Length: 69
Image 1 (cartoon, rainbow, N blue to C red):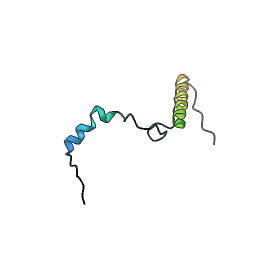
Image 2: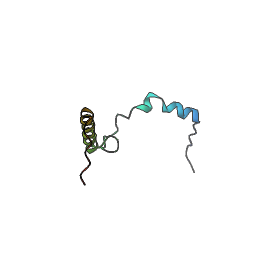
Image 3: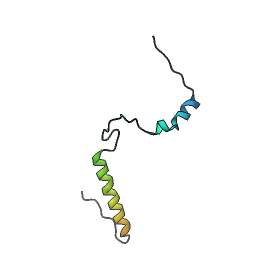
């Protein structure tokens, strides 16, 4: 086989993990809901759960409602 084999040691790879370049996504990365960013429906569900948790914390004396079947 013709080609180049790149060999990196463990220490170098662990140092690369903490570099600033590894912590930011590339500027040309497309925004794909559910893959490179949260799906829009997931964001809506997260907001609903957050609002529900906040309302339950505001009324600690009430029992949580059971989900309808």
